[in-house]
Amino acid sequence: MKIVQVLATSGGVGGLEQHTFNLVNEMSLQHEVHMIAHPCYAEKFNEHVHFHPLDFARSRWNIFLLWQLKSLINQLQPDIVHAQAGKAAELVSKIKSWLKPVKVVTTVHGTKKNKSAYLVGDAVIAVSKALTKGIPPEKAHIVYNGVYVQPSLTDAQKQALKTDIDQQFPGLDAGKKNVMCIGRLEPVKNIALLIQAMQDVDANVYIVGDGSLRQTLEQQVIDLNMQNRVAFLGFRTDARDLVQLADVVVLSSDREGFPLVMVEALQADKAMAATKVNGVIEWLPEAYLADIGDVQGLQQAIQNALNAHAQHDFQPLFAKAKAELTVAAMTQQTLNIYEHLLKA
Image (cartoon, helix red, strand yellow):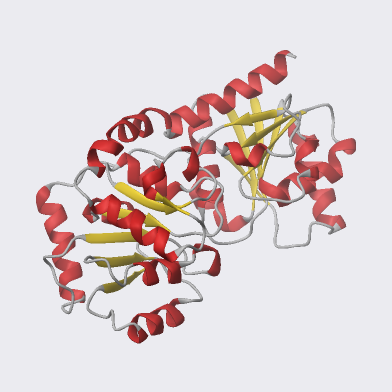
C-alpha cells in the first residue's frame, strides 16, 4: 500500500505532531509511506519514511502552496491520502477535485465547531468519541492515540531523578507525596486551576513544561504562599521518566482531543485526576473527574486519587491502556480503515 500523510503544522511538537510521527514511523515498517510536512520535522521520521518538505507556514489559501501540494500528491500517485487535523484537511479539500483518483482519510484531533473540511475524507477518524459529533456515522471511526510503552526505571534511576529535583528545589518537603502535571503553560491547559485546587492538598506539585504563562503562574504560587510546595521543572526531554516519580498525575485542561499525558500516566500505573475533557471522560472513573474550571471539584478528585484505594480502582485501566493505547494498536486500526476503503 502506498500512503501519503499530510501534516500542515509548522513548528512545535504537541499531541497532534507526536501522534503523526509515531503513526508514520510504525506504518513505514510495513508499507510505502510518504510524509508531506514542514521541513522542521524532517528529523522526526525513520529511514523508511519518504519525507517531502513543504512550507506549511503559508496560509491555507496560498495558491502556490495548494499547487505544490496537488502536484506532489499527483506525482506520488498514492492509494491513500491521510490529512492530519484541520489545516491539512482543508488544504486537501481545496485540491481534491484536481487529484488523480485516490481514497482520502482525515483525522480530527481536537474540538472543532465546523467539521466541513474533514468531510472530504472517505473516512474520518476521531481520536475520541466526542469528536465524532457532526460526522456522518458511515464515515466516522474512533482510533485512540497510542504511545510506545516506556521502560520502567530502576529504583536507583528513580532515586537519582528525585535527588536531582530535590537539589534544584531545596524548599520542597521531600517527604510529601507528589502531584504532577505535564503540558504547555498556555491558557488551554489551565494550570492556574490546578494550583488553586492544590492550596489545601497536602502534597507537592511538579509542573513539567514551559510556555507564555510561566511568569504569571509563578507569581500565582507566590501570591498563594505555595513556594515550598510547587516546583516548575520547565521543558524536559525526560518527561515520561518523570511520570514514574509521581503519586498522581493531574490534567486540568479546558479542552483536549485525546491527551497523550493520560495514556502515558496509565501505562506507568499512575492514578489520575482530571477535568471532564474529551477522551478523559471515556476512560477515567467519575470519582476522579471534575467539571471544567471547577476548583473544588478538581481538589476532591485529586484527594481521591491520592487515597490508597485509587490504585485498586485504576488497576483495570492500567492493563487496558497497556493493551489498547499503544502505537501498534493505533497503527493497525488505521491500516484496517485504509484496507476497507480500498476494497469498497
